[in-house]
Length: 327
Image (cartoon, rainbow, N blue to C red; front, side, top):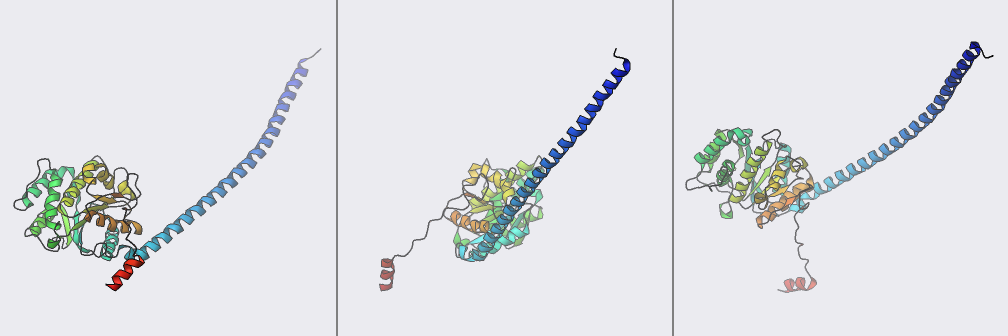
């Protein structure tokens, strides 16, 4: 007859077998898991090494391209803007490094840089719209009128344009009679700061964007500058807005310009001005502006290409060379 002790021994034997099985099984699983982990880790390390290699190669290629373009910039832009003058506008947050690099290329292209007008935070502050409009009304030259639909910043842009740009090459380098008063009024109002002699009017304008505005007023701040840029363009022979990829991203100033079709049809933009090749494109875009055309250039999703399409210069044929030598 099976007694209680037999049952107890059986139960103990069963639990002992389970314990041994679990131990042996876990040991096997641990070994397999360890092996799998080591294989995955090795594979990830190899992939990371390959990615680092690809990154380093791309960086070296970019550095090589930048070095080549920098060394060739003078040749690439020579005489593209000969006889032209450019005034530089800066949005709040624009960097001195970009300004200096762009101005250097403009000079290499044959242009003269008349001066710089930096827009202040107060200029784009939505709370100061009324003050901007009053300043424009106070500073406007005698006889200047505004369209009924003109925004306060469009008015301000038109007044500033009258002081710093001209569509007439014969007037380039010359100051309008009330130019100094216009700039002084805006500067004393804390809306701009002036460097150089922007009152010696230029034929072209370059507007340097800053970091994207943030917060609830960002859209209004962008539109304040876009309206100003549109009026500035109307007062001269052309305007190009420049910046980096950030300016062409969501919330950026270049994006705001490109989304405003009425202005984008007239004003060009370049979102690669932090690159040597992009600064060459700035010159080409200004040249295109002189011909009455506009385009949106760079690497942004809404750009029309990296650079303007340029007509190739005709190659002299042997017959034309002989004719010119014989004449």
